[in-house]
Length: 163
Length: 208
Image 1 (tube, each protein chain N blue to C red):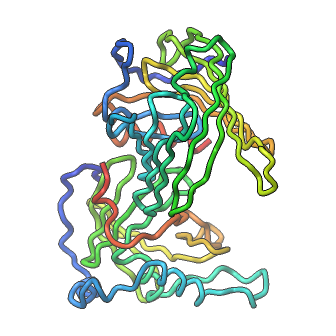
Image 2 (image 1 turned 90 degrees about the vertical axis):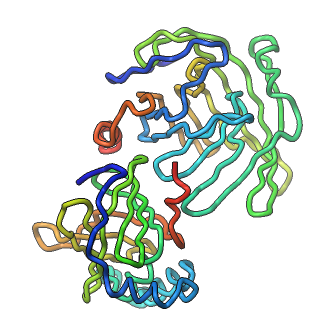
């Protein structure tokens, strides 16, 4: 992993991202609408209290992340990240005022995949729990463990304003 | 007053009367907060935390944040002095309070806050490995309830370093009795700490 301002651009571009680009930015719904829509589709009011939090679908993850800047908090390290998911498949992430370039992908089952520098893609599910979104991974027993909490989703690239 | 305990990081600081650390300096606090000085402006110093939230702070430590700007969410508020003269605080006899009011502007709404602050005197204590002259203050923030009672929202006792231009320790108690405290534990010169060093220092505190 290389935290610098001179990371090489990834060569892989996602077809889905290219389709978004071609369709034009004006067709991207507002993030507020997207989040509301995703939350409503995951409403668990009528479910038993022991129901596991729902994993987001590919469509839902796309609505939340792609074309947006996402603020996240790593529950293990305590570090905060701000990541812009460009529709062309590139990801730009800032942590403690250092930026790195990477790439994203979304799998058919809704897992979001991220890789920075020379590292291989890591794919994880996103869940909604108690009106919040989390990235999860299975623990040794196969139970879903929350590893990242998502604080905010903002339209466009907010990293342009960074110092 | 508690001593501020220091890790191994050290910074060479100008000792000019109205000195402040250079732009690009990163301050790390005991509660895990980390901020970078991104600009010195006429009104004060602009700091940004690791969540891209910017705070414009007056050079007078008793003034509340002049501007808060969250670059990710877009939320902004401004505060301006309405009445009173907080600059008088050190000219008054020790322990004599200054009273002033501030208007906060947020989303088209105005809210008034009343402040009562006292200068408690100067002390010389070790901060970041060096003995430094510090100023001690106490401030109380109040507002009117709907039934027009003036209630105290919080009380803060803090120590300010004129040399560094930052509050080096603060204890804040809310009206509901919650207390939060933090101290300056490290400062990195511009370019002194690479990502690895900085993240290690931040993780060490936040993983506790």
